[in-house]
Image 1 (tube, one colour):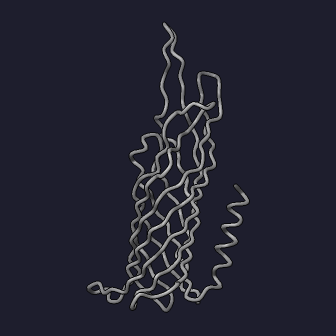
Image 2 (tube, rainbow, N blue to C red):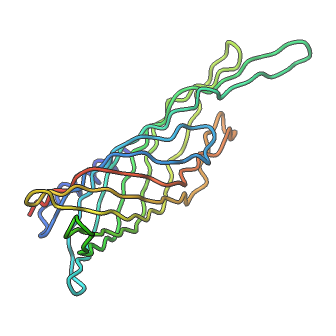
Length: 212
């Protein structure tokens, strides 16, 4: 998995040599409230966009992205098993580090918005491979075991508004919907504890810099 990530980062950096390339750096939160066991993750993403061709005055670009976000367990995950008169407490603590590697097609449409003047509406569709690194501990009384989670894939669709504030530098605000394409669960000794569903909305802000 480390080799896959290294190859992706090398491809990301090498692609800067393409004409009409810009980099978009954003941060934000993903609402995965249908995942009752995890907090909504904060994170960041770096997206490189390379214009391939134009349809009229609208550039069509290839996007390659790498991000990082942390999924933390909710504080109230736990309970007690009852065995007659005895109660044995259990809990699940820790977090999951999520590194999404993405590829997408992007359309950048010049538009005018009231007093903001000339802006760019960027529509994006693609997929992300989420490399999961878990640090989850399942406790049953005095006993502790390591829980784990597999990698997963999501389909991603987004819209963003970009406004140039100085030459080649723009502010960015956008929304993205991601849909979990694989059934991914947190497991303990081969037994599913709960489904880790990444379906939800992401809200991002940041900036874009035109490189060449």
